[in-house]
Amino acid sequence: MKKNNPTEQFTLFPTDTELKDFKEDSIFEGIELVSFRELVPEISDTGYLTHAIYAYPAKFIPQIVRYAINTYTKEGDWIVDPFAGSGTVGVEAYLCKRNAVLLDLNLLLNHIMPLKVYRGKEILSEASLSKLLADMQESNEQFTPAWSNVDYWYAPEILEVLSQYWGFINRTDGGIYAAIIKAALLKASKRFSYTEDRTPKLARSKRKLNAIEALLKENWREQLDEMVQNLSLKTLRDLNDFVVYTRQHHAEDLGQIEFHGGVDSSDVAVPRVCDTLITSPPYLQAQEYIRSTKMDLFWLGHTEAEVQALSRLEIPYRKADRVIQTRTLNKVRETLTRDDLRKRLDSYFCHTVNALENSMNQLKPNAAACIFVGNPRIDGITVEIWRILVEYFTERGWTFEKVYEDRIKTRKLFGARKNKNPDGMKSEFLLILRKNAIDQTAAPPRGSLPQDTESLAPAPKTSPDSDAS
Ligand SMILES: C[S@@+](CC[C@H](N)C(=O)[O-])C[C@H]1O[C@@H](n2cnc3c(N)ncnc32)[C@H](O)[C@@H]1O
Image (cartoon, rainbow, N blue to C red; front, side):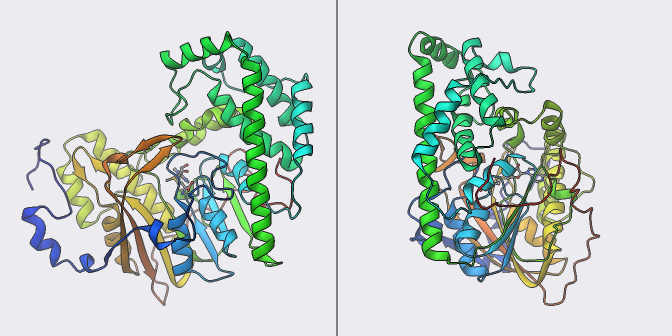
């Protein structure tokens, strides 16, 4: 491999010259080509039950999580996910009678989980939902998000109506019905703004400006109301399906789902001993999750200061405090010619490994860690994240068990935007590491969950029986 040749493509997986090396590598023996969708035929729809309530960037497909749960956990186990995002692991854990502790930097987790893991046992009433929607349309309360730029994103007349609806819904104690309407209002607040609907980050486009201008000449308010009503009804029906499912399958043995949004997983200890880790870390060429979801966070009542503080902690957009060294990672680092990319690489592995280590330290001896990663390219170089993690963790008392390779067909990265090859990835990998029978983990313990600092780490929550407001 030559250094300083940016045009040369460097793959750490077999190229002609590397094939011999690669075949002799014992890790190669552990790769199993699979299709998780085919392995889990009982899930035919990735958005089944409550999975589709919130469109989060780079969500797990539930089949991967279900496969890991079926294969590496048993009923009653505790599963930890330090990069929980929109809580796919929480939903699947609950449906499979496992417990879960979920952490994520994004505060949205705290708003999403009570809806997605709804604990009520009674069928929700469409009439009660309609009544609350009607009250909202009649109300005169106002809520303006604590967002200095808000006027830039909305036509004034639309902002006024949205502020009225949010004013009512943020103050009402309408419990689960208010939470259902909030989820619908989030989607409508994006659709009726100047941002493109289908890109993750906020992007004010000429196309969207024209579309809103045209809308304002029509019956836009009726269209807004209809959208909120239809989305709310759809969510209510999903929740009712969830209630029916859990009634049929669970009897009384419901699992516990703890969630901690607004937490930097690379800097806190997981609050309990767990049996298995199932997670998908952020991408290396990352989505900026906080920036992508900030419109939602503002409408939900979070402030600019909170959102900025969280953005600064996002992986891989912060400084590394140590340099992770492994054979494969060192090769990538040496081959990169751009300093900014080397810094991003170092930041990514430093904080991703710190977060994984914090959770993995809390696993019992013999526990499995199931880590779902891609094979991104950075400046034309393929970065085999799973292999780097194997090299790092096998030096620290973990055993490499296997890696599943799932070839990507079509993956929805965000909303309806289909991306056949996100991040330059052709495959995704589920890496399985096994903790040794005697815990030899050498890493020093990190800080504990700051439960009393409300803005960054709300107190631990367990999905309530019926109240999600
Ligand atoms: C690939 S997404 C996880 C999506 C999740 N599996 C799901 O199904 O919704 C990665 C997550 O890592 C989170 N993240 C980024 N930096 C973090 C940090 N320092 N601590 C905790 N979470 C972080 C992002 O907010 C994002 O939700």
